[in-house]
Length: 302
Image (cartoon, rainbow, N blue to C red):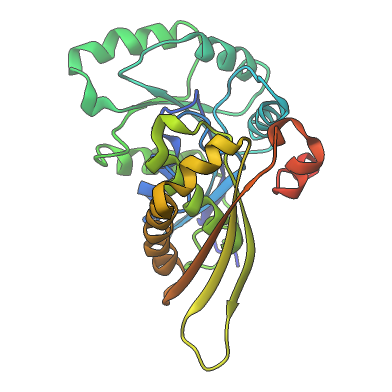
């Protein structure tokens, strides 16, 4: 479907870990497709959010935060992030107003200098700083790179997000509507369900379990003569001690993870869900290529 004056294109969101990329994506799309956590390195795969209006369709790509890799999973995440800079119509380079300039930003800017795609500087979390502190921050970034636009926002509060969307539309080419108007992501439900479960595990275990968690969906089925969807999933950890934390005393933690995840999964699927969770130890899985592939991290797809 293509009509005169209709704008469409692909927009990549990049930035250091934990600047609010997923929060922004969820705010724009209006429902939860990217998991949120205050721990860095939450997002591992590209997540495409599709934003459709009467005059435009914007396909957002949310990437892993660009950082120096420490293991093979880190290498994979870096390749995903760097590939997202190519073959898109626009790049949003998001920074955290509260944290200001960091070494990771210099690392990203050096990569941006090698491409010709227009780049917006999006200053997020402006609700956390005094307005007077924004101008020196803007001047600092402007001195390092020629941004097409500079837009301060609060993804959490929604401040200036509509303005940013209108600016994005101006930079998109005329093109077709790639996805149906009611489609908000190109990821299969299986992927999003796994991410929702992983989010709850990260939130509830906080500092006790680092990012050595993966979730594998074993089965999703709607049984005959039943309105309930049955979901079976396994939470993968690297150590026995982490397994104990995820299960919790008398299974309480696992039950709480399941209860919270089920609420989001029911909202996603629009039906009642029976969720069964298991926990399994796969030692050092983040450094094993075969296990990374088993858990859905495939370099050849990026």
